[in-house]
Length: 278
Image 1: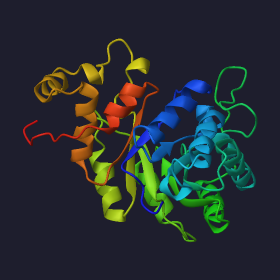
Image 2 (image 1 turned 90 degrees about the horizontal axis):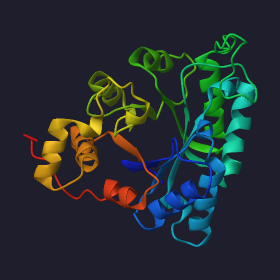
Image 3 (image 1 turned 30 degrees about the horizontal axis):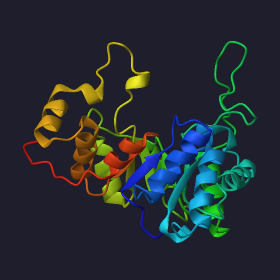
Image 4 (image 1 turned 90 degrees about the vertical axis):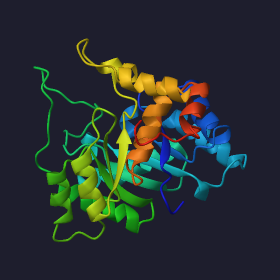
C-alpha cells in the first residue's frame, strides 16, 4: 500500500492468544480495516501474525491492500540488533516486509531478553553507547534491503525530531511520529511542526488511558461535554471522540484499540460529521 490509511486497529494491551487473532481477523474481514498497528513490546505479534496469514492466504485481501506497522524496541537500538529484531517481527507476523517500522521510544536499554532491564534496585539499565543517529542509519538500511517500506519514530518531541532532520548523513526523513493524542492532549505544536516538515502524526491512546490513570485523573470517555455531544448525535462517546480527532486535522492518523467486535466496527464506521460548534 502506497498511502497510510487514516484509521488503524491498535494491538497494545491485547492478549497474545486467540482473542487478538480473532479481533484482527474480524477488523480486516468484517469491519474493513486496512491498517494494523503492532509492536514487539506488545508481546502478541505471533497471534496477530496468525490472523494476517489467514486473511492473506484465503484471499480476503492482497498484501498490497494492507498497511502493517511495527516498532523497534528499546533493547535493540544497536545497529547490529536492528535487522535481527526486524526479521523476528517479520517472522512472527508472517510477512515478507513491513509497510512501516518505527523507533518505539527515543531511549536505549541494555540489550538482552528482558524488555525492561533493571538493576537490583529497580532502576532501568540504559545504554548510552548508542546514538539515535546509529539506530536511524540501521533503519535506513532496512529500507534499502526492502524489509520495510517506510521508517519513522514514536514518542519524539519536536526537539528530537529536529535532531533527526539535521543528521548530516540523513538519507530518509521520518515518515511518521506516533504519539499520544486525544481530546485532552491534542499535540497542536507537534502537529504544526510535522505538517510543515512533511511528517505524518499518528495518534495512539485516542480514547484516553482510563485503565492506567490515577483515581484523581479525569476519564476521557466520561467527559461531560463529550457525553452531551454523543447524546445529541445519537453516537457513543468513543465514536464522537474519534470523529473529533478525524476532523481536527486531516493529516492525523488515528489508532484505536479494541478486541470487542461491536466496538471494532463502530469505531471504524462512524459515518457522521460534527458541527463546528460541537
